[in-house]
Image (cartoon, rainbow, N blue to C red; front, side, top):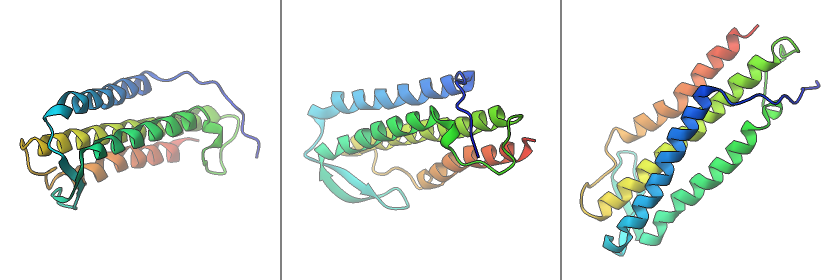
Length: 164
C-alpha cells in the first residue's frame, strides 16, 4: 500500500518532551565532566535487577551511556521524521493517515525522551555511587523503567485503536 510522505510539524507535547529529555541528558553529561576529577578509578559498571552494583569498571565507562543515548537519539529522531515507514494496521487510508502518523510519532518521541532521561539518571547515579553519596540505583528503579517505557506505548496503542 502506498503511504504518503507528509510534513507534519511537531506538536507542542513533542517539543516539550524533546526539551525535557534533551536538557536532562545534556545536564547529565556536564555533571559527569564536572565530577570527573573527584571520581575514583573504579565506578559502577553494571547493576542487578534490584539496582545494586554487581560489577565495577573504569571511570571511562561513564561515557558509554551518553554515547548510546546519543546514538539512540539520532536513530529515533530519524525515525520520527519518517512516520510513513512505521507499522500501521490495514485500516490506514487517506482519511486517517495524519492521525496515525501523529500518534506513531508521539509514541516514538516519548519513548526516545524517556530513554534519554533514564540514561541520564543512571549516569548521574553511577557518579554519585563512585563518590560515595549513594550505594545503589534503588530497588524501585527497574519497575519505574518498565512502567515509564510501557505507558506511552500502551497509551499509543489505545489511541491507535480508536482512530477510525
